[in-house]
Amino acid sequence: MTLPVTKSIRGQKEKDLFINDQGIMIGDGEAWISKINDKLGIYAINR
Image (cartoon, rainbow, N blue to C red; front, top):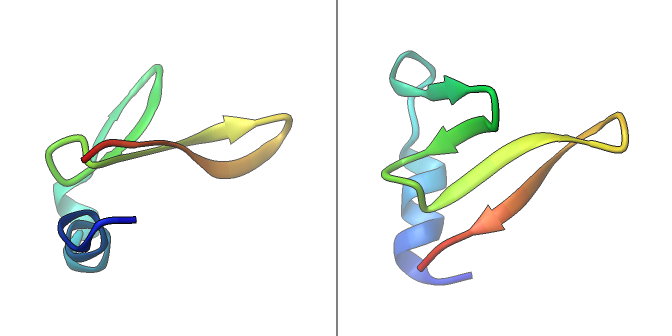
């Protein structure tokens, strides 16, 4: 995981989350969280 992605995840505030039918976006799309096989998990990490 790159430093910018790590900073984005650590700095994310709940009030600033973007949520849609695909999941929860962290930062400007650096990471996406969603339910996978009935478990919450990170399913995408973008540089």
